Length: 210
Image (cartoon, rainbow, N blue to C red; front, side, top):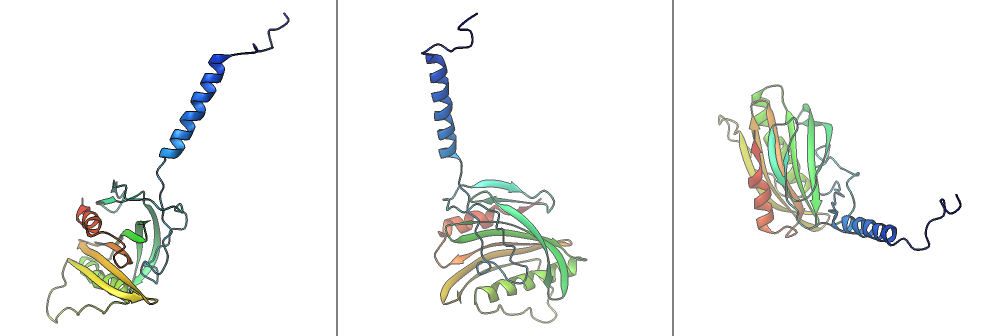
């Protein structure tokens, strides 16, 4: 029974299979999408409105849009790369809530959706102005004018502002919306002119409540 445990000196089928497997592995590695989420506190609101996501991979993708549906916050949106989420307790003008921020950074701009729930619909609508004000302060932009006395608190509002953070121009574009006791912020923030207008529009207009 000699020779049964000794492979033939030349086994083309084995060599070809190994080469094919190696080639497939290299192709898979080369085509694997690269997601970057090194979000820093100077790009997102401070005081827990910033949900820094350090576990996102450190690479710089171009726009690779994909649909995202929140598993529990009842919204759908299209992100320009694979997002990640984190939940923190935050304070919005004295109201403490758990906010879940789902976000990604692409080419120096952060795309993010924050969602939380208030004790009642009135405080959910009031939270919109609190979030908007915190974001404006963070990018060094002038505060928005307050709601006129006696006027009902709006259920949605928008912002497009430019400020100076640490000497550099920063742009904030966002949409804020409340439905029932839930409220949301949909924002793009980063260095001025870091994001083409069409990418901002695609992100903001893709947001919808379910």
